[in-house]
Length: 160
Length: 416
Ligand code: FES
Ligand SMILES: [Fe+2]
Image (spheres, protein in one colour):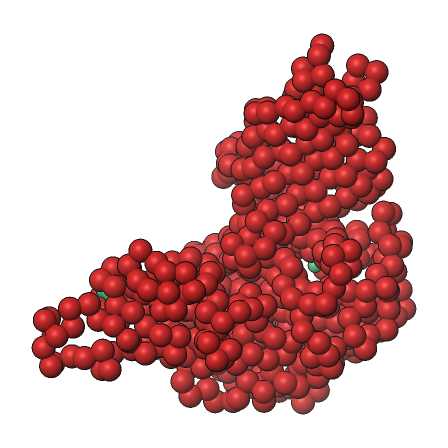
């Protein structure tokens, strides 16, 4: 595969891993220096807001402690479309912009008798990813999940 | 004791009458409408922070009890509040959440608030300064001097929050109403300018008071793994839960051990002014505002009740205006790792009240909601909620444990 194809492949495989909550498998696609953030622009306060920011170690702790936390277990389904991949051959790096739409299929967040099984739009945004290309692999160096939403209701404990 | 049949389930618990409330106060549509009239149209609400309208001509919009409101900073730097309603035919004047009147609008001029509908214009003191084809339509019968925006009482106070009330004649001044509850943090919040760095909102299917109750009681720290491992020591259990006049409460501080939660670190380096390291104060204001300072980051919640079983909560995070970019990022992370929409605690809190809302829909069988813990007015005592509901009873003239009856002060007030 050429570098751009590697990048696309990694983004799509990661989407499946994240949907499966296979967090550690996903982290295996992330470089040691990986930086993760969920951000938005808030026209309410007229500023960029950071809703979550973690390095690889922080993410590893977060996913490790998930079973200790009470959480909404309604599964998330991400629909990702890679829009652009820009490869820097010389630097062995790449940047990619993807659209991501996240649906939430309700399970135990409200009243499961009534709404379990219903899928709702949860998040609308973009993945702004940076990669390192090495040994015929594309590894995430950073991911910014740039969401449009500021009304986030119950929110989530999970990386998006 | 064993599970109950219906009669046993409905029997009075062995608690005093002010130690429970009737769940109809969380679900009854008539009580909800009355709360908007008797409480939300009378109370002071911190609708935003001054840093959200930092420059002259900046504005911010909101609603209280369904009434649209605009606050703006005048050319004289004064922050003023008005009903965001045009006196002509009732159009909402400004539709955006925030912005600047220095920009012109398709219907109007810069430095004016313009109603897009028929282009009436107002200055930042709320005077009507332009009526399109005024003389042609109204001759001498109605002049721009005769109309104007509805001005609202507005004060910037307690760390730069913009407080507004729909009541032209509040019974108590803002200072007297909120000042005593803010005493513990006043020096800290007023030492230097603060700045908002976080905003998001949640709409949950639960009554607004259930959210405020969650902010008032810490017994639910059993639900938060983070709070159990970073708190739950002698100093934590000694934290005082102190009641203040007008229904407010303050939960006293202790030193949080952030490093006990894997991946978290001490927040001592970025403590707000005059605070020892890693302190945690909570001020809960009647009828539904909360100021929550975990040493390095301030959170403020404001509820907007939407229906008996529906509330919007706005969450703000604040730091010091002078923060360097690096300091700010650390503060933001301190705030969001716990209190952000993807943080460890907020999600649990919202699941909790949503779960209560699910059992207290309008028309659900009335139940008793217990507020009866006594632990020497420390952190897991439920005196904060008992105190709140006395105030609620007074404003509503209803008994919280039997809202069909007029309010009577409980016999045990003196003992609290
Ligand atoms: S409704 Fe505002 S100008 Fe007519
Ligand atoms: Fe909580």
